Length: 195
Image (tube, rainbow, N blue to C red; front, side):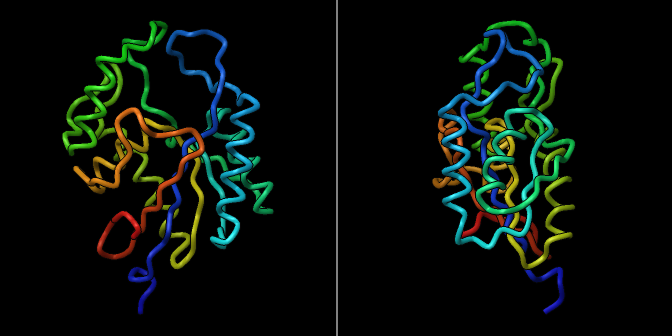
């Protein structure tokens, strides 16, 4: 079997619970709460039997903190990767989170309609393509191995819409829990949800 047929397992996890300096949408990283730190430790402990080869994360501080705690449990270093960040707030930057707009948008993403997006920001397709570009590079580097990638809830919803639209196994549009993780595999046939 050639390397391209040997699947890479990518465990995509959401950062732990975070607190922010202001309630408005912003582009800053946030800082883990005590519960968020526990969620990060629990993530590392849950993956103890997975033989994780590497831990990577978004450059936003809440993802870095989560990855560092989980990686500490796993005895691994953390590599920060650009382009794994949350979808940009666009025209909503500096405004309160608009549940109606965002909930409808990510529901469409989960159903496979990635054309919707944040005005002044990214569509679901742009978010998914940005992140999948990084994940494909990681998969090529770690054929036959398992890698933990700590990212963000919106990113994970866009990935589900791109890889497995309409899947009954996908989280609810408001259900990507802090510290939760989903496993995707990549080989010569492309991406799929790991069974």
